[in-house]
Image (cartoon, rainbow, N blue to C red; front, side, top):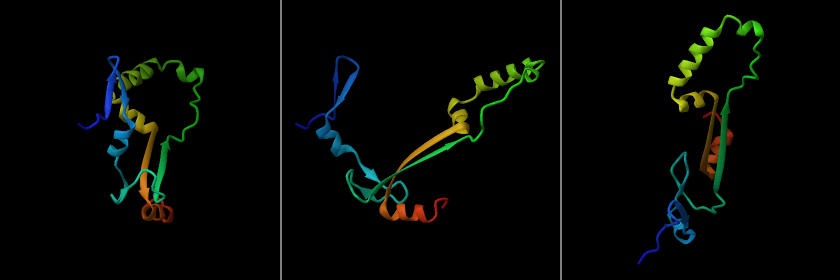
Length: 112
């Protein structure tokens, strides 16, 4: 009988069986699709962070006076908006696995 990949203990806690899970994880280059192994010396991890370059908001007392309607409008608009879409406008992070050939291509021409 095959071993289970995970075992449920005490209701909601899930414990993963490392002997089974290590065989289940598949790595591939996110650029070309080439197969990679977990400890492959030709496997590279790339992390990309994109975030708004705006500094801290500078709001004066004059900005707040008489603009209560605009602030309420903004709060209402944000409440209706998709949280993921709002977050994407401010911060986004990517983690990619690359093979050696794609790593070299990325270094040579980072913006494609």
